[in-house]
Length: 463
Image: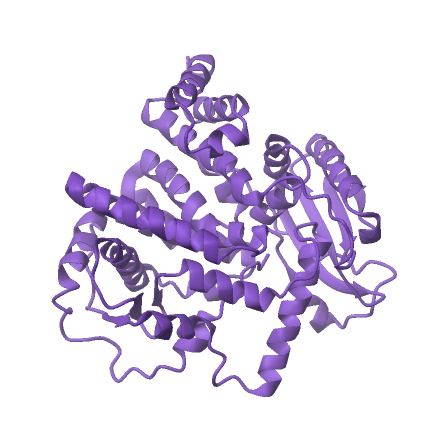
């Protein structure tokens, strides 16, 4: 499901490039490009332009609407408004929401550089090559290398948002992995300087994103959090060769990344047809119905559930879903969602139905949330209860996401220690079951507590 509306592309289109790439690297950039090549075991086909842009000008690139005509601007505003209403229908926001302003606010707070596959350029916020900027540059140069070997346009051509998000998670995870390798190659003093700069940057970004919808923040950050965790599993299985395979043949959807069983055991993902238009609902033409159909995605489902029920139960329920489809429609002027969730068996359908009913019961009455069951498919409907409704959100997805992230890391570490795939999955589940979200999200958690839970998990599962 689209949670972040990308606005960078429109801004990039306004910048005319006189040549697609330079004859040689900028001397300031060349050492970092060489590091990326060495770490990834791949060669750049050609250099790329790297633009160092003053802060205010860089922020304007992310948020400027110049060049967008009135009709397009109106359509985009309507899409933002409908999406804000959809967030309430899914139980992910309470009160009024200006999604366009929040998206701009989040990008200004959280984007320090980006690579555009449209014009093949890297743009960096700021004109000084400080240590933290060097790390960011390594990250973005990795994207340029990926684009030359694996074609990042897949992000825009994937059939569903969930498929695009899955590919983005692999792409960002790979770039973070290379970035971390660069940091590890530096001296202790340089690493300390980078740590201080990153801590300051995180604090500033947190303050700057104050008031932004939590699901928006979680979805924006997920590729940089789940991505490296998924990379650890790929590296445990086959190093960069396995990463390259995932870039050439991306996971079919977010669920294939969220649950390590899909990666280790090769579980089949199910493609569903668009949900039937519920009754009574405003009529949609076949073209409109298809345009309003997309995947919900494992991450959004997890965020929906974890906002109201225990995160462990939310993760277990998300794991039961083998495929999904979302249809956005209107009923009596309200934006609504019809969601079909496929499971692998009737037994899984029973468990998922119970969890989704608990979610529906926790939604405000005005949402008219309902759950139905047909064989192994669980169908949900929910409508925007309005900005005045009390949503009863009890937890933040930005905190709960630490649970599936930890599970991926533990599974990868178990594989590295010689566990079988089944044993690794068991150890990952046993370890995460023993720890609360509060513990895992606590930066001051005694490491020995986690290590003991991990040892207990390995001892219980590995024979």
